[in-house]
Length: 526
Image (tube, one colour):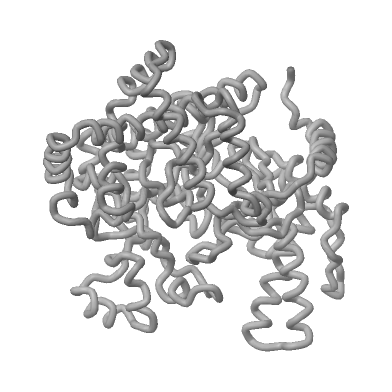
């Protein structure tokens, strides 16, 4: 699953306003999932959404407003008519989660006070830092304690419902032998409760991302400078002094829900590329060289933290840093299994080190090849690995195949230097996919359209691999061309995909997949 932490205003699951708080948009409302709400109120809420529920894309604001309305009603009835069982459970939740919940509730109140703007660095002075904010809210409480306390209670109540439902889902999954797998982003949003209250543990004037890795048609900034994600860099030295308590708290809480968790961009534990400006300034640096950028930005320009992997000494230092930090994460995770998203430009020391720690890394068949261009076959994949054809940041398997076919055909008739490069790249990708799956490679480079035969042949090959886990993105399983996210862009379609799959189609695909799981001996006993 993508991160389930409470989102910010852009609705990317990687821009949560808290590293622990869960997003109420995932709450189920059918009684008794949310207490004190009637079935007729739920049906009226669904009716009010109307066409939004039939759209191919999710309308997050409309859904959030509707669910918040129901939550406010539920909370009002909860406080008006005390229920001993619910009261005791809620009180225990607040006590057990006091280490993060109180600050989170304060942050939510500050957002309301500042007209729902998350940009705490632009809030008025009385609310822009923790000490002044606490004094300001204490003053408000003297004027209207009922309102302030009620809002604190409401925000805590919503989180209680969220954790209650997710823990119930975890228990149900455990009873069926199903492992829920979560996702921990390498960073947190600058405009989050975490950064607001823990500024000494972040570098708030440096933002993480990636160095330029090649041509990007979607975004010229990525081509020139790389990806600037806007996540503040960690002050690892400060974190180390307190035993990585922030990380331990984060991992421990999510381990209550997930039995496995993927750490997004695990390379960031070793070293990360930093930008000395917020993404809102990216446009200022288009077309500039490093000297011009440094002049515009007070002498600072993007660089690696702490060291680039440009010599043996720096590589050894980065490996030691990664080892120190990841061992703290593993310790905090306990029995929760860690999976590494180790894609991109991966230094040669990373994968052996992850294997030493028992952390499985990704294997993408059409990205793995030998020097002669031939594919790395599935039976060569290390057992301690996580095989998949794509992630949320990539085209689906179906879209990859069809887009490559179209690119090859187009540039046969419209040859250009750039087109020749694109055609060669696409040809190589299809050759790797076909070679990995035992699909005949056409001598004339006229590739057949994507079909069920190709689809299931490739899925079977992934399941036959030696990797401990063979994983299908939902769009791959159902042969959809939809893309979940295009990195480095703020397109309207990002993160908004709503699956429209009939029960019949779902059952049909499920039966075929089940047979392949049995055939490839992927099925567990019992």
